[in-house]
Length: 330
View 1 (cartoon, rainbow, N blue to C red):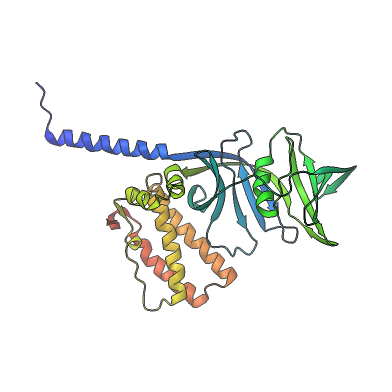
View 2 (cartoon, helix red, strand yellow):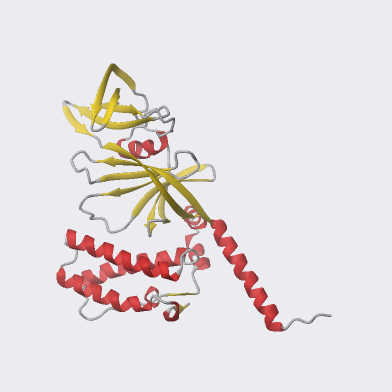
């Protein structure tokens, strides 16, 4: 009879539990590939707008969008996306961490219905706008008398752009025009009582991007079971500043507020994605997020020069805790 040392059996049992844990985690992680980006740019500011990304070949990939502006006033990396769950489609609000990990933080049931759905061809005249040629004008009238003119291009690539276009046009303008394959809405005009308002125009480009969604996190949020999810998935150890935050006496209220916002973001990212990311990737994200925010503060003046100095001094001290040896056990 073969006798196994107790420690060997124990080690194998721990390894088995670890493998099961990782397998369960991987089953909850959804990886999606994106190959197209539609950027809706403001006519008045070509550096501001909404980026909508999607997969042109796979309709099951969630369409998502990020709003941006040329002044970079938004600190949080907010993201919106559709999520199909239990025969409903939800319009989710969330955050995008490290340009590839999505966290949901709010939702509502999405309806594709909109007040204006039927547009008719205006004439046989073809139009030009920006770098687009041979645009067809289609028109509709809302119940309040608002007339909407859409200028539609046919890219002749047989791609269905209706869902990403709807994500923008329905959410922003309350319209959902029927689009054929290859068709995109390039530009829109709104007329009411002789007043004109112009919509945004679209740029297209190919991309090669993978995004990860945590299925259990999103569905726990929808099911109102988020507290249970966070308790179950809380890592055994994490940076001390995720549990206890203490800043120097020179840190004023506004600087403290911005430090807490950053650290809250960093800690949530670690809580949700520590099994997917290496500690080195986590350190890199910490550094890049600090740099990104400092650049924004310099541009929008949220923190003055003195506050920025304090902000960086505090974070440089906390940075030393970004190693497993310094992590705190729960």
